[in-house]
Length: 318
Image (cartoon, rainbow, N blue to C red):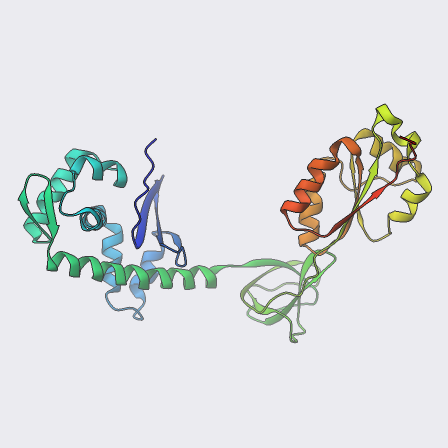
């Protein structure tokens, strides 16, 4: 595997999947990233907002022009001493293909050569690269806007809602709801009709959905070698599990301890991931955890920067 470590102002990658070709464009600071299917080119060509849009669309669809752009960028970065065999793996073509593209660039007047493996980008070549770069920036902005406008978020309708109606958005019990009542909270536009209780798509979302991150209580109990549920403070366990929290159990001993107070946990498998997702949805959790699994659970919560507390329920004297 060859890793590319050189730095340039812009990077472009092309990926072909079945009948769809994808293009990814980023800059050095990854502040402009576009990942899109070529189906977007059709709508882009209809747009009159950007100058040179047809030329940019043609460039993206034309592998010859896209490859020339990449080769010119490589030559500009390493001129005048640049070897064709070093360019090839960086842009994903063969050295023979690079040689043919070099000949075309020489004919186009975009580069000149004063000897073997010595190439320099001409003023015409620089102007062409800069023009393509500006159009890439414009096109990236267009795609970001197109993708943002096309993004549809699923929610539950709190009221009967009509298509294209402005709706308010809020989180309740970990679920996103769309309401006909629009206040200061986040809002969007419904993309379909829906009756109360049905799912509905919401686009053009504005504002931030108010959400308080859930808290996690970790209830540590001893492993079976130290007594398991028999050495667990069951009374304190019952007090710590509030009625409105999600309950997780890590370990058979934890499952047994919860059974003694008549609670069936919401999660027994994938508990760490489940409580993290719940917290980010505004739901608090209580996790009964065997001490042998405690460190991995705490590490997960620390990595996610979530608020948690640990309560030791062991009645062991050691």
